[in-house]
Length: 452
Image (cartoon, rainbow, N blue to C red; front, side, top):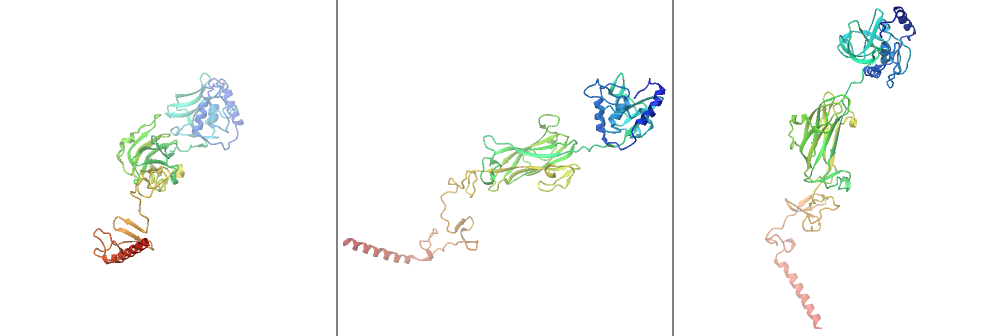
């Protein structure tokens, strides 16, 4: 607050008078440094008005502060008030020099954003808000400079006569921190429905067929206000049913669309056929940055009657000093502020793989029928308790639920060289005599009936 031309007598009487009307020392509201600077910015462009304490950011022709009124309002002392509230002018540069009602004197070497530099000497005085720069010389400040300039934001030399002042109850803002999340999506296959099999448990699960390829995208997003450093992503494919053929790492940092990330070429994992499970080092994600891993994935085997087993899973293995999780299913062993899924930074694409119909008792092609189209060859014989095995020939199911091989009859006991016995029990050719006599008697009876 400059009073270069103001009469000395008035100045000498004004300082004590303002101290009399100033409120007694009491607790003041806490404030952050960012809030102080935001208030200072709102005053830039307003006119300088001696003894003024207010301004209107929407109407620069309306009133304005002087230097000490400006700092007092930005510091929000002795109480919180709007910048348009034109209250009493509580503190002058003389008060800021002579008292410590809601502030204290600090070393200039300790200056931080939102602190003040004040002097009052030989009836002259001025006070500015420090923002940055040389704490002992040319600094960037906010100040109500004078009637010819108004409220300005500028770089100026701050002479050694200025003492550094710090408001009481300045609170530090919450530290900037990353907030990481993971999501995974799968591209559809041209000309094929994403969920063409709605039978049993396969409904609402992505469906595809053996031999088909598609792209699964894993997106890692840092939505926090601080960087996420040392980020590692884990990927695992259910190797019995699907395989990863290729991967690419991209980023949208500094661009509206995704481009290849510099980390893409720094991996130890091969881009082609990387294996069933592998880790990728994503490096640092700046605040707001997204990185994406595009995976070319191929279906290799029918996933059977168990829906959703042909899955690809992705999870955050590590964020430096903040997060650690060894596998998809393992709980985090370290978590500092990550909230997705209650701290489980993971995502999965669940699929069902179908195939041409084969003779296995399953509906391989999801048409509602099993083993249709003669895939099992000729119609099977009635189930008489005997089934065939590859190693031991026929087996007999016992009451106990166990199976016992059935031994063929020995050659020379009614068995033919081809392995077919004409009669059971090992009987020889004599066993045919009763059959021949029976046929003869039937023929004699037939002739008698016809002669009558």
